Image (tube, rainbow, N blue to C red; front, side, top):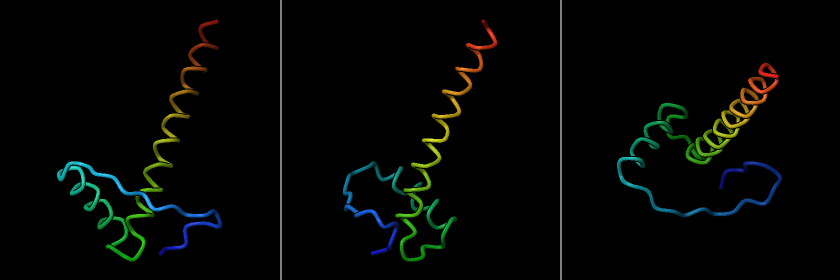
Amino acid sequence: MTKISDEEAVHLQFRVPQSRADEFMKLVFENSRMQHGGKTKMFLLLIDEFQKSQQIKQLRGEIARIEGE
């Protein structure tokens, strides 16, 4: 298992449509050339990017609210 942090790791198992799995595997290959732990790293990267996009969206809303005052 790839050491991802000092935090205890859990095993995730879920089902997605084949087309989405293919897209994910393509991203993994492009990012890590399928090195050991590549899927884990890509999953964590996607989660981080999603969280950042949500923070940006929230900050833009706050800026718009402040500018509108």
